[in-house]
Image 1 (spheres, rainbow, N blue to C red):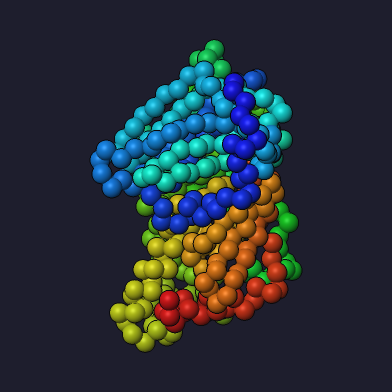
Image 2: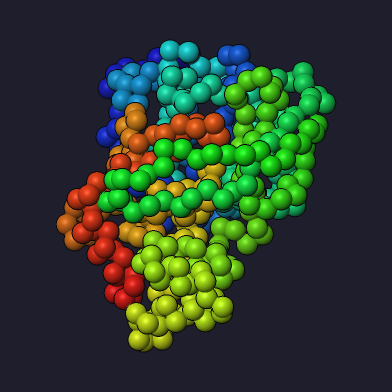
Length: 384
């Protein structure tokens, strides 16, 4: 490994990571697994090219002690595998990293723009990494983009495990949606989960259930594993009327939401909801399309152990749009909107659970009341 001087290291807390959530030509997914001192990292880049010849340049992987370290070390991979397509580009790396370092930093450029991407390891994780990687034949926008009837394979990154037994535990994805950002009381401290089914298999399995969370292990004594959320074939879109109504909860009153859910003709009730607030049918139609496009992107960007639109970040993304500035610190992520009725900030804290290393929970504040209702009113009137 090659040590680099302090001046060349990057303090990730000073970077703007808004490209992760806006309409930037680069989107990044990753999987990472660890066996003893060996890591396997699979990076998937979704690229919007101007010319067919456009490609990633200057790819390098570093390790550093903290998110804001002054020194970094260039990683020399043991093995590298590259699969370059027109949109989807995959880089798979096997390497070792020091137990004293807690962040990996990916550096590259695309269309002459430099990018940084941080990946937590070791002490920056909620729990130790699993030694399992997985994949399938679908072209998902994100790793939790698998759908019912997809076949998914699983591997222990230890090469000597052919025919190894795996175990899947299925949980129904009926997790509650986020509550508004100014509601500081009544936030659930946790979600009770019940295992609906257990499956033992070797190498691979078909996802026979939609809207289920699969937690897969190869050691049931350990708490380590990987999670896959299965979806209907049209995900990340919400398509059925009941699903459309459910995602309206962020811009409905309680009475309106109850009326929509209890309506004999939900499709008619759905249309009447919009037309009761927006007289112009064309504007109403355009607003509906924009709203559910935001829901679709929230699903694509923020799905983890539950659907992306239900997460705290998904809720804020739907209501306010992509953040203009995103700052990442060790335990929080801060979103800023500088042109939305004055500066608005939302702070999300890392929260650990069994299924993902961490998800982000909004730190709710009563002072966000005005900004929230302003955003909701814009959606309800089509004044976007």
